[in-house]
Length: 197
Picture 1 (tube, rainbow, N blue to C red):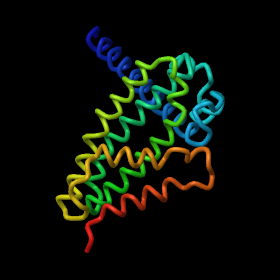
Picture 2: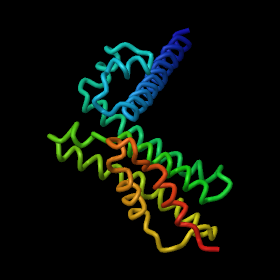
Picture 3: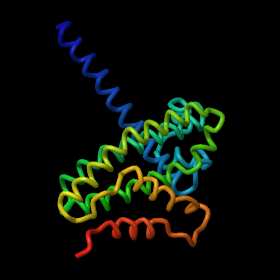
């Protein structure tokens, strides 16, 4: 009888941890969406409303805005890193997988606008996040590029870090100029990687 209640208590605690992780994922997804739409200075009440939680829940998980921004940044990096191999496995071609991944990467770059200003007092923290970004995403981009080269769809000789920097540079200023369409330019860049026929 004690074993049953012990198992029950254990599985109940595991269930609560799983629910807490899921709730935190929902909150981070909501924050990312609000940041894309309104920037990182968006009111916390907007994030709470989007996530369907009270503001106290957000402050309990993320006591400062910088904590929330950093958590969103890490969450987005992980999502972008994890989807690369899945896209490669499910897309009709490696180039199609690369195109889909680049769209998500651009979404991520848009989300992170304002990050530097939000944590500018913590240079070491920003450097750590940048290293994390490169360590997680560079291998994914490399894998996608290598697959597209191996399939004969794109030219060889392109370094993933150069592609990522090029995309990043095309995204600069997109949030402050409604007439500038960074996504269109990034699509042209990726289309231009194709092997001439």
